[in-house]
Amino acid sequence: MIVTVAGHQVQHLRLCVPHSGAWFAEVTFLEAPDVSGRVLLALGSTNLMGSVVERMSGTRGLQRRALIVGGSGGWAQMLPPKSYHNDAQVKALLVAQDAARECGEELGSFSPADDRLGAHFVRRSGPASSALKAAAGGRPWWVDYQGVTHVGDRPAPQIEPGAVEVVDFDASANVVTLQTDDISAIPVGGVLSDGLDAPQTIRDLEIVIEEERLLIYAWCGGDGDSRGAVMDPLRRLVQAIAGEELHGTYRYRVVGMSGDRVDLQIVRRRTGLPDVLPVSMMPGMAGVHAELSPGSEVLVQFADGDAAQPVVTHFAGRDGAGWLPVSLDIMGGDKGAARVDDDVEVTIPSGTFLVSAQSGVPNPNAVKVSGKITSGSSKVVIG
Image (cartoon, rainbow, N blue to C red; front, side, top):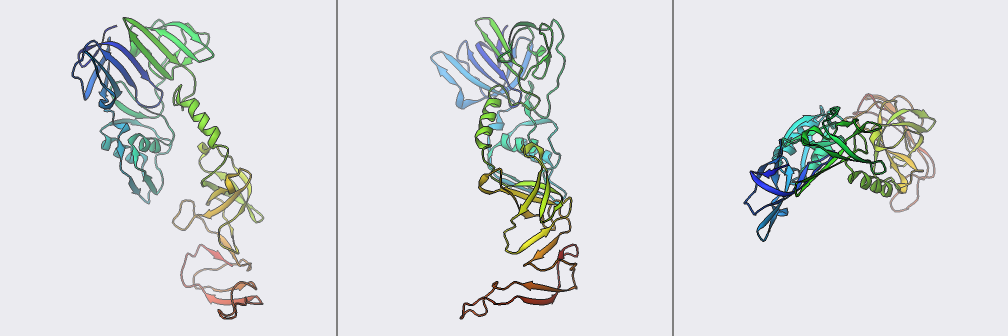
């Protein structure tokens, strides 16, 4: 099979097409042509559009080697931070389009996990691919042979019998060795069945051409959310290490109250966390407890990162997602209806405040304070 880059013949080629991410090719030319920028990589009758990565290309003697990445090679470009806000929820497509435009890539089909990311989205400074991954919400992204980037599941066509020849199958590594004259006949996502005991879906491709020999290896492990033969084991390793402790906050939806504790349902299943019940509260203000309405959202943290110590630490505010009416029990007072213009009475327990700054003596008895609510939401009930 004849291989050329921008019309210049190639002596050696290693083409890697991962299930998620941009394909790349390592090429060694017969000579040392001046090849740069966007180029056409031709493998027999199959054409691929990519760009030469200058910092990883060069010459040695009279021979040139180059790394070519699918598309414009822009997904590795560093982007500045950017903030988004929309009370109607920020569109994932907008975040992805901005990143693609800024790094010079073309965005094709876009099927993220969620069409909208929330009222706020903060893009951190970093590679453009990080912004695309965040917008995709965990769905795979990939660059096709025409250099166009897509988000979502790859097409899964049935590979025609006779289009490829199965040379070998290593069941322990899930690797099928193939032979074909048409690279386009074995797309990543395609399903192999001819010559195999059971159908296998191609997740990664590695194509090696050297001294007129063509070797094709198809990794058929993983699933539709796979990141590839190399990335999947690395992700499992990182998850095994990081998964020992739970740091950060997690969104939960209130199912109901179990006495003073809360039954909760996880909002985002891909966090890998289950529904939990019942969970105690630790809102950070002494003497405050909330009667939460079903459907409202809360934030849960795990004390010391310990999976055995979940606590509710935050409640949604009036403008927050999932906000619903609540009843607050303040300083041990009795709960009751309280709205704007209502008269209220709050009992402050003994030992809560100093009688005077000079004496340093706390109040010996409980004190009742009366007043009228002058502002706030009529949906909040305070006791």
